[in-house]
Length: 321
Image (cartoon, rainbow, N blue to C red; front, side, top):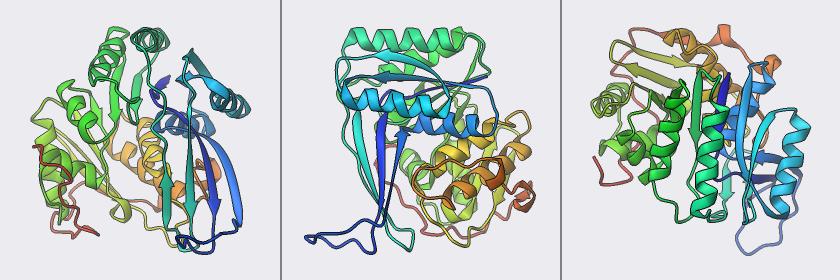
């Protein structure tokens, strides 16, 4: 069983346009409505491929009711935590070449009582879990202490803990010493103060996070695949996508894939890249199903080419080391 918690979920509307032009009236060519938030995306990807999962989700307001209805349609097991505020609604605009523009609302603030109930519900939901996965942004005004409280709740229940977040929350997550963190290339650069020009740079940055007490790092590297690093292992995997359609939720699917085989890093990384590549090939924030996965096509390198140049060569996005 894998439990996810999404402190700041959303209803995600994805629309397609022929081209994004500021100041113009645009006609959308397609639209899709999905339950959103990184933890929800992870749970949806796991559920779609037959892996037992449970999603802890705060909800409130009309958009919260809509979120619950969308989740109910998926058949996903949900632990709902009522809140007074209304769940946010996000808009994703996709152009024909795969360029994605996202408009994300901040979401509702949660009271101290609501945060306490969220932590308690997460701990209870994790009693039979192998992993607790804490994902996404924090509600506005919420202290990063919430991450530490959620990690403690998961550990008290006997679960390993994975975290996928960004910026200040990612730095706070490192101090909680989770078993796994999943930054993308830009987040890895920002968390370590490094420029990532090569695979060697990414591996060294990941080891910098290990030195802070993190058990393992799963770094999604966009077109360069993904990298897994722990105290004994450095594995790189790659599966080129010829026709990318949307990157929304691809990192979440990558994490979901890894968790399906996390006991074996090479197998977990193969699944991670297969899930991520499949997600990029699908529209909006649609998650891949069994028919979308091509595990045999993934190239796994247990002795990776550390001189490999990374597309975009991410630079630090914050001054924190």
